[in-house]
Length: 178
Image (cartoon, rainbow, N blue to C red; front, side, top):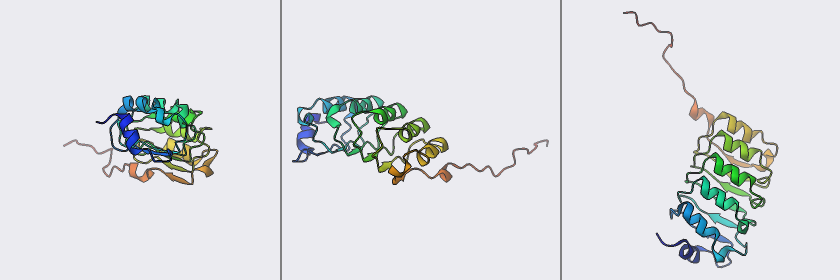
């Protein structure tokens, strides 16, 4: 794998507002290198795409703590291994208040993570939340649907609860007295 600094030089847009490091499997160590990059220290970045990079809760925490991302409008973290702890770090970060689009689909998020998003003051400007293909069930989906600032989630993409329905066609009380 190429160094993260090299990837930034290759994929940072000329205006330094967009960085797409999709599919490079940089992991949490790569995220640490990313936040230390002198190329990103001015805080110009508006769009950060990090899908399919093996980023865990630790990497999400590192991103959430980095003040260089205070002007981000879009953050795509789909296809990683982020769970509720990482989502809580994102949902409470003082640096993500300008986010409008948050892509978290295909991670390990459960109800607690969805509830953290629903209750987040930080993510008040998010209008596009992509959170399908996680482990969120009824409690988390209900929290997102009933969030105090629900109108901000005009493009909320969650899994259909009917996908989780389980119908047992056999009678549970059958006797096997033969």
